[in-house]
Length: 205
Length: 205
DNA sequence: GACGAAAGCTAACGCCGTTATATAATGTAG
DNA sequence: CTACATTATATAACGGCGTTAGCTTTCGTC
Image 1 (cartoon, rainbow over the protein chains, first blue to last red):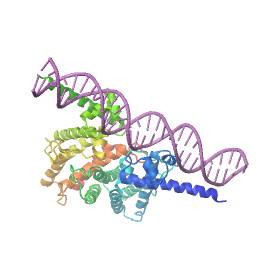
Image 2 (image 1 turned 180 degrees about the vertical axis):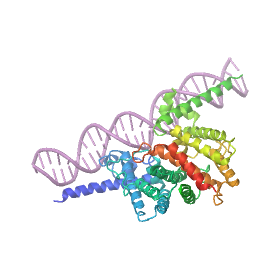
Image 3 (image 1 turned 180 degrees about the horizontal axis):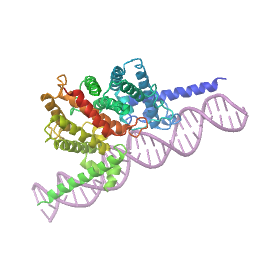
Image 4 (image 1 turned 90 degrees about the vertical axis):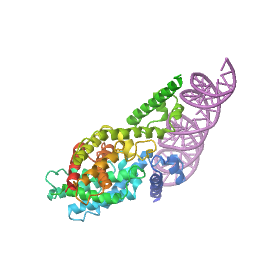
């Protein structure tokens, strides 16, 4: 009978409800400000119940990040059809900045915190379909192979990290310091577009 | 008699000892992993004593950051003698990367966390001698005024943030993801030097 | 019908930041 | 010289945290 399967399904649903509640609270209040008790309350369980589905609080954020990394890689994959690698780099950057500014809390958890994500079950490292960085690096490699950059820029990892960091820097400064009157960070989208333009010009033959 | 002054001096010394202990623990274990009790233990006080010198834990990090921002501005100021603004931008970048990689925990607290620092008592915002960002922006403005950049790059804030973000991105990715096998971030100094070169080439006439 | 696994519960442990309150030291005003 | 005010410390506690030990309930399986 399918009742065993029903239980497995129910367990999976509970697991999902925990993740949904955690995601919502993490995104709205931040990781530290969200307690296991609050997550449990949200779905009308006791905190201990969560521990039947996840090892600990860290495992919650880890699973959420795993899925977000996959989603980002998926968004990138949709740009795979763009033939020209230089154009593709531009569009990747645009998509990345958009993702970061639209989902600042997700972004913070994914790129500004220092929890290693687990590669044993996660997206396949190095597979451009599941690993956004691998996709960027591959696109950069295509541009290099196509002779689009000056010959001294022949290291795909180095160039990919340069491009990534330039945009990550803008996004993360906006998130961390955007409300601080110290620095006026308006128009990050515009600055990012300019930065892409400057970088590509600097790299090009 | 000078006894009142003696007490004021002793209080200041206690305050300083609290800050020293807090800095050491924050840098070694991180902000969240450092408890007020641990700071108090270190200097053989009870936790409550700290609250006579600082409002709360946040005030400790805030004061430490204030001083670090001033120190960074001071380090920048030492490059003020460089006449050529483009050369000065390069050296500022080099100094900034060096600071970030040498003091990753300080860097994390200063640039990767989202606590607004207090400008009422802190470094004077906009004064290049006390505000590292203002110094960078001013140098960029000099380069613009000297006609060193293409005419479309005429916004000093935009260009300054572009340059800053490119290096901040590399440093902060190294700090957050440097131990993650996902991305191989070796040679950040080299990549940063390359990035400066690419950016300046892209900006230049 | 007994058994065992799964999934929930209550209660508690040892932390945390912070505060109410007490106390001792010491400078100051009458 | 004494009374008071201020300062700097201490003790004890509050409410909250992540987590765990141990119990109960549910429910499929032998």
